[in-house]
Structures are given as structure tokens and as C-alpha cells.
Image: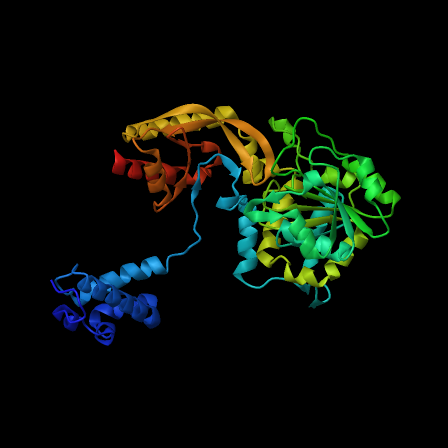
Length: 464
């Protein structure tokens, strides 16, 4: 077999134009358009030349076969990169899997405002330009008791806006034990530097006292910042002032106390057997002048950054140039408003998926796990139920977990099975522990359970 550019098969390859104008490619152009069809045919021909030169092809495909190869390439090339999957990891707010799933009301509201036009920045009463900042603000005021509120596109942006608008060029005091880094390399010191505020560290990693803050206050101090320990714990010989103590100190010196609460908890989680998580209400009631938090963590809504606090300070932030760059869009505001309505109606635990998962009883999870195992065994899948723990995730309640019942899938190669499940048409994401594939029913959306069973049965048959 010749392996150079003079190979006779190379001369037999059809031209791109002949393939493009063939009857076989007509439907391909109708489906994907002429431009992408042309690109696909060029790609297939280029691969074919390499195969011939490497001695891996001894016959030229027919035009129909060329089109089939081009179709396969186009389907892969144009396949969406963002798609739904099934979270069976047991991590409720899984950052890598899109954090909080939305309630049906939130989904409906997003669809309603996206289907056509909306009053995003239009005042119905006056018939003139309005402000998007009014959407969700009144709900936040009613739910949290805050003087005013505003919504941006995520909590990191909210913290950046708060520091840029109120502290630029001046000092901000923060405990060394709160200089955190969260997922993706996001670091509080970096955000402070980007905002133009000057970082003033006080105390030590494990112990910071009220006098550490007091000694650091100067005429150049713009604020005291508290960053909640959202994704880590310091245990042992530790101490730090309460929010109330810091608020009293800040107000004695006529400076604001800024609290990055983070998780957006509006419900006390201790009633579910979890460690205490400071709520937004607690931050405001303790005297924090602004509290920032996420919309897509324990609040259970779409990705958003929410700022609640003093009306005069929020007014400054609404006018800041950065506010426009990080503003929330209509889908976010619609979904967030619908989510907040669940809290206003005292139905969050029944309607918001995150809270439904947290509140779900162990007996209910066990019953579903046993049913799943029964159905898998009927399809010759080796499975059993075992005790386990579910985690909250999303940088919330570090070290705190909920008892659950796990479905163990026995196989000769757990990693291989996990890979097959990930790559299936309806991807299933589980977790591997001690060379066993584990699935946690707590985090599986009820409507997705049939797809989970079908996927597990299909992929398990490939390695049995």
C-alpha cells in the first residue's frame, strides 16, 4: 500500500462541489444549512486523505457514505454543550451540576416573560420608562424586613459592587479567618483588591477579638466586612465577635457593617438536624447595614446576587456604574420573584426543590431506594440498599449532612459503569466509594426516576 500524496486513491476522491451538489446531500443542507454542510464535507474529505496516506483505506466511499460521515460529524459538532442530567450524587446544591433546581412556579414565570415582551423597564401606570430594580425588591422587603434591596447577576458581583460603591480607595477591616477562597479560585482578598478597597486584616486564623477590630479603625476606615464561613469550618481553639457586637462597634464609629452571608438561607436549618446556618434575617436583625447572598443556593432560586439593607446605601449602589454591568436579566428576576413568593406564602418547604430534598424523610427515601433496587434486580442488575449521608453542597453548611439510603450498583468495574452512565443519552451522575457505584435517591428529581432506571439498566448490560 502506498502512503504518499501520489496514491491513486487520492485522485479518485470526489471534489467538495460534486458532493455538495449531489442529490444525497440535499436533505443534509436542508437540515443543517449549506455553510455547515460544506464545512462537514471538507472535514470528511480531509480525514479521508489522511486515512489513504496512512494506508488505512483501500476503497473510496460512495456519495451516500460521505453524507453519512458528514451527518455524524455535524451532529457531534452542533450538539448542545449544556443539557440536563440526573443528579444521583446526594449533593443537593451541586455547583458543578447547576446548583438549585427551580420550582414549577419559577419555571412557568421564566417562560411567561421570555415568550414575548414584558414590563422589565416599563412603568405601566405612567406609560413611561421604569426601573428593573423594582422587580423582586418589594418581595425581599416583605420577607426579610429590609429597608431596600437590589438584585445583580450573582453574589460575587454583589460583593464587588458593595465594596466598589461604598469603600473604594479606603480601608475595609476583615478577620484573617474569613479571607476565604471558594470554588473556581474566587478569593475574597482578590475581590477587595479589584474593588479598589484596601484590605486590613485583623486577628489570627483561629481567633479574632472585638478589640482587634477596634484597634484597626482609623479615619480611613470605610467599613467592617464579615464573610460567613460558607464552605469551611475552623474548629478547636477559636473565637470571633458576633455580628451584633461588630454592628455596635461599627455604628459607634459611624461606619457600616457589611455581611457576606452567602448561602441565602431564609429558613432555620437546625429543625432538619443540620448545623446552624446564619439566616439573612439574623444578619439584618443583628445590625448589618448590608447583607449579600446568593439566589441559587439555600434560597433555592435562579443564579442571582441579592443585596438587602439600608435604603441610603442601596440607593448609592443602584446609581453606581458597575450596577449596570452586573444587572440581572428578565429571566432571573422572574424566577427569583416566583421563588420568593413561596416564602411569602409559607410554602417554601413544599414547593422549592432544594427544601423538599432537605426536608424529605428517611422513611420516604428508603421506600424509594427499595423500589429502585427491586426494579433493577428484575432487569438482572445487581443492587442493594445501604445507609449513607447526603450533603447540602454549594458552599453551604460545611461538614453537615443528612442521613439517607443509597442504592449500591455492584459491578466488576465501577469506574467504567460510572463513565457509561455519564455518557448516556440521559446522563446519570452518581458517586464512587470503595470501588462501588452509589446512587442517592434524595437528589433525583421525581420525574427523572424512570429515565434513571432505564439508563442504569441499559448501561449495566454493556459490562455484565
